[in-house]
Amino acid sequence: MERTIGVVAENRPGVLSRLSGLMERRGFQVRDVSAGVTQQPGRSRFTFVIAGDDKRASQAVRQLRKMVETVDAFELSPAFCVERRMMLMKFDLPFEGRPALFDSLRGYSHSIAGEQGDTLIVEVTGTGEQLDGCLEAARGHGLTEAVQSGPLAMDARSGATAF
Image 1: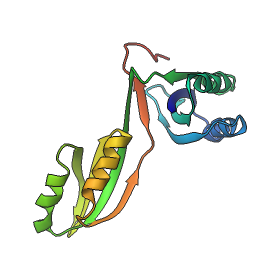
Image 2 (image 1 turned 180 degrees about the vertical axis):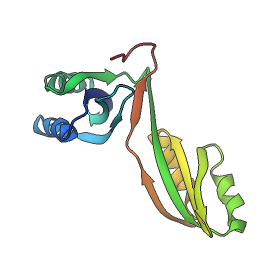
Image 3 (image 1 turned 180 degrees about the horizontal axis):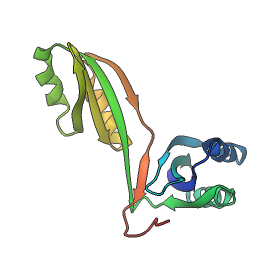
Image 4 (image 1 turned 60 degrees about the vertical axis):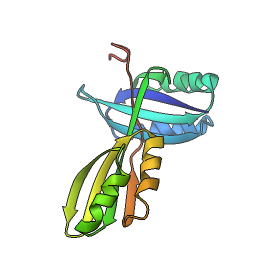
C-alpha cells in the first residue's frame, strides 16, 4: 500500500535533504520523491510516495509539519489525487521503422521530443502504471535508453491546497 504526501516548504538550500532525512530517521520508506518550484516565489513543492497505510501517512504528515521550513504538509487522497510522471525514451530507429513504433505507442500520451538522424527521443506522460505499459510496448523497436521522473501530484478539489 502506498500513500502520496505533498509538502510546501521554503525554497532554501538543503530543504529536500532535511525533509528526506526526517523521513529516513522516522523509519518511513520513501518509494518516490520529486521537487520543484511553485507559483509562489520562495516556495517549493515536494511530493513523497511512501509505503504504508492511512495511519502511517498521518504520522508522516505530522512529523513533516513540525519542520521550521514547512509551510504545510498534507496527504493526497487517492480519491481526489491527480498524479502524473514523465518518461523520455531514446530509440535507434530508421525512419522506416517509426510507423510500427508509433502503432505500439497508440493509447499512450506521447510526443516527439527530439530527433537527430536515426535517433528519436519520445516524451510520454501518464501514471506510473501507464509509463510501465508504454515502456513494455516500446521494447523491440530499437529502444536504447529510458529515464522516468518522480511523481507530480495535485488534489483535484477546488481550493484544496491553497497556500
